[in-house]
Image (cartoon, rainbow over all chains, first blue to last red; front, side, top):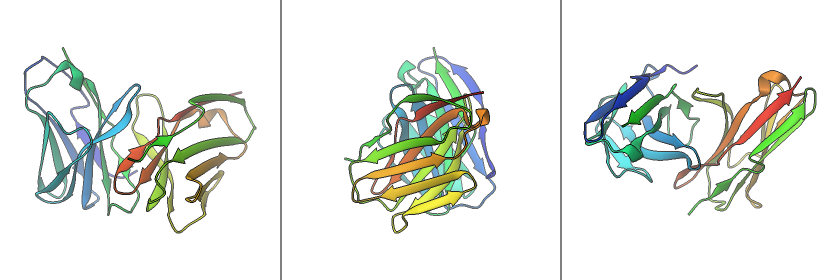
Length: 112
Length: 109
């Protein structure tokens, strides 16, 4: 398995609070991605990074921001969590956009 | 806009039967298609990646084919086992990364 960890694995938070999810990789892959998975919507790309400090939006980026200050870490921040952001969040990595993606174990976030 | 469809959404087969899973995509301008397996409450495990220049890829009991002209990929799993029970997802990679909704498979002993 690719060396990808996500933290925390589970989190319950209240509406309006900021939340940061962390993805850490040990593979030295250039690309990192954040997805959310919801029943009826499948997996949807939130943001991705193609290098340190290089990020771009996915299809559902509103309400989310990201940062990548080191190759191995990619942070996803919900500035002010809403109930619609209750979801399972997955991080993925790849050597390039044309190579295989490998996924982390996921973070289950509940916003009450 | 790329749309990726997996039909059926669920299927159940007896152990030993071959599995055929379908993935359709609307935009043939992809550079690869990847198949994944997801167990309940877990992340996605990569099964096979087919580059756009390839027609098929094989790994053990798994074989995936790609027909860009018709917008289809098929994942074959030979001699299914109860341990193959999971949700199978395909992802088309082009200008966008687009996942299908998945096919939930149950292999009955």
